[in-house]
Length: 485
Image (cartoon, rainbow, N blue to C red; front, side, top):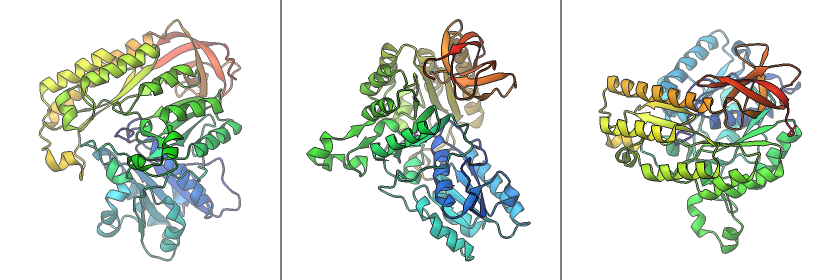
């Protein structure tokens, strides 16, 4: 939601969706891939749930699919290029399987609907992020040989009444969407145009989903939104209309800090994460709630985008460098062991060397645990594309990005070294990618931890003594099971 959610997962594929909940009565097969942010992956689970009722089971084999869907991201040009290559692949397979239908979902679908359908004829169906409940009708259209499209943005759709099918699930962690849309008009970002205005989901439906996940054995959830700190439930409606609410609605409204508390109390042994926060909207009551509950992880993804006040203003980021520092100081004062990560854009239009040095000095102040760093790419339709010339040469963008990445790697190693010698609770997610003899999990700070398997199991909380580290991984040995099991 890069403003600011399009980051945690980058534009790499989230994998072909394979559901553990396939219905033996379903006769058609769905192949779905997700690119971009965590919200896209969560949306794919909603799509799979809706299509399961229409007779589709998910498959990992592209060649046997009756319907192929790609859930797309428009945040960076590279993401769009990747999706185009995948569409070419799908259409090559389609030539040997004429009955196959291809559809595009998500942000890119909304932005490029006519181009996909009419000019390039790459797809049979285009569906925007708020139109997934219309999929049954759209499927009928393409089954009858007609192209189908619905990219209408909604003022109230949250999919709060759809129970997601958990795709590619490890059975341990899951996403829970709490808001949709974004009201922060950052000049570099297409999200407000592709996902619409901010609206929040009924808190009771969120609690019900969390309780269901716990009953099914999940141990960790991530509350998702383009801007979770803007969560505000007052009975429905857009956040911007809250001032029109009744006194009773305002008195009983639920903000993000209150929602965090409700979720933490509902399942005291469930680990809780959230993403993404916007510095201008994160309040002290959210930080205090994090400090109050042990099951809320001590980790905040807090995109800053630039360390220069001048560039922040050009980006329409409604916080200053000093305000960001104050927020960091408040977090560290209340939660000393809280990990913080960043999004950073280098080479934004008009960025000077002085602006770049301001970014490096901001990084030195915070010393982020990890980060997601990109060179600016102009996105059609954004205010920056309309009003600002993309005037920083590519060679300079690349050099500045390299300097930012190198500094981040130094800081990441500094942060992981602080864990060495400590014993920390780790939730086992699965086997390490590098060794079948080791488990991989994460601590509260979202840092990857690997340790010998011994007699432990996926989904267990284990106390691990950290003996060594790299800039990205903690290496240790299990001491005991945690009391939280």
